[in-house]
Structure formats: C-alpha cells, structure tokens
Image (tube, rainbow, N blue to C red; front, top):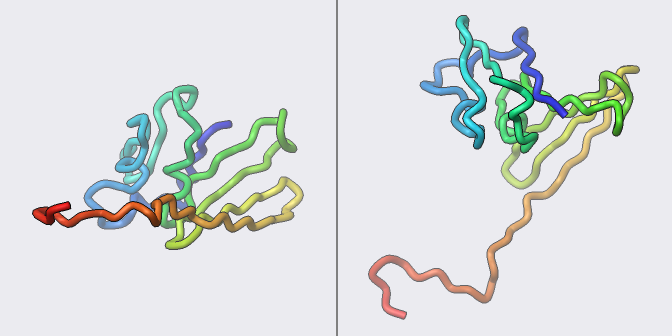
Length: 120
C-alpha cells in the first residue's frame, strides 16, 4: 500500500500552525512542501497505519491499494469522526462504497479511575 497526497485538494490545514498529517504521523514521515502542500518522505518507510488519511480534514490523503488485493487504481480515503471512522473505497470505474467502522470503547467498565489526590 502507499500514501498519496492530492496536491490539488491539500490546503496545508489552512491557518493551523502545523498540519494534522504532520502532527499525527507516528513515523515522522509527513512534511510540508513549499506552497503549503503535504508530502511524505520515502513512502516505502510508511507503516500504512493511515493516521494521516483519517485525520486529513479535507480528504487530500488516500491509501492506494496494491494490485494483489484490488483492481489497479482502487483507493481508500478515511475521515475520523466522533464515534466512527468512515472509509470510502473508490474504484477505477467510478463506483464508490462507504464503510463506517465504530470506534471501540476499550475502557473496562469494572475499572474505576481515581482523580488526582483521591485515596483508594
């Protein structure tokens, strides 16, 4: 898989001090090119975690799928929403599928979190 930034769509997160893709990339691979456009340095080093894809507010970043698992030109775009991640699959023939994946609440209801200074 590989990350692709659509420079026609990328706006560098507008007036943000640092774009979300740069802030969230765990591999520190996203950077700003001249002209406030996002880029990725060596795409081969990308972990394919898709954090940048999920957090791009304008949908300028997509995850391109390899031929081994899809048709040529198939791409995934995602949006991190409050209660779910919405994945949009775009096929080369123009067909689109939308998949909503709920965000799991992994907190254990049997564990009580104590406030600072509170005694057990």
